[in-house]
Length: 445
Image 1: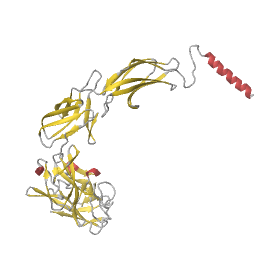
Image 2: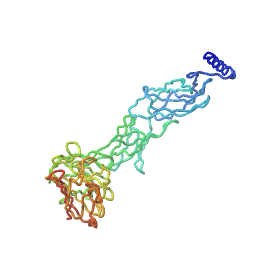
Image 3: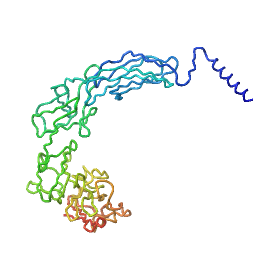
Image 4: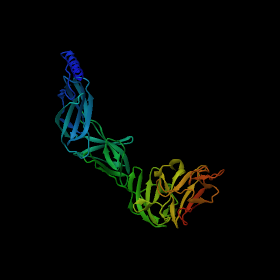
């Protein structure tokens, strides 16, 4: 009986095969014969070009799937495009040639890969000569002002004229040739990069006649001269609006702050610096601090350090205490509230004897009617002062315990209490009896 069934199945299969029309061909999986005929494939191009290509593709026995065109630098795929090939015929497209740093003139490979629905492929490769465009000029775009940078040598461009101390802008190279594209250079991670227009923070030691230079091969740019210093130590750029320096200072030491025009009008953090007769002195205890000049908010942010890192609270009560939370901010709570952004955490000033303080003005650096911040062991999440670690006798500020309107350790204003607008308050955390026996005092001056 089994043999009869098998023979019957074979007869059905043969019948199906021979019942097909003569012009139809049944091909097992993995077969077919895709072909590529290049109609237009560039032999030369410039970095930054859009390569135009045209090909004829076909497979007489199997439906086509895709055409992939790749540009290879030293066997590395740096650009590609995929085209859906629904039927035999002619297809065209454009492939961008990346403009990259430190890539010299040379050859690359254009690889055409045609694939049918059975995943059978036909690959064709063409060699292409690439060279860097010789831009006639560059444009430095600084806001609404455009400066022309002249070509002074191969890949080298300069702008020399009367300029302000700081010129912040991106550089734009014009199209070169019929297939060229505009190329932009911006600033990211303290370096000039291609493909963005984030302003490059050029700066000189002073305003006047000086030269801004840029190399389109190496991306070397200048000048980045910082004219800001404290006690003779130059501040380094953190970003376009911030410059910082780490210094060892002693309590009571005079600070010579140079190069910051109008610094006497900046907001002064009196916990760390005091001003007397137009001079500035260290108010916090002796130690190492990071001084960050914030030109956007016009204040000097000062943070304690341990070695090369921001300080944290040590087991013996030395180190640093930080504030994270709502209702407080420097130089103003309106413009720079800390909130729950750990990057904005405020350091209390270490005053010695394991005491730390922060001075605030109600309505300016602290809200008069609502606060919800707490003290942390570091400028980040982690160690924190909960209600079991800190107490206060203040009749204005209370420590939350999780059931009295604030989470454990968070500070709030007592019912019916507000801070007097314009009044100065000093918050002091005393750890002399231990980190889990902290005492908070709030004094109105």
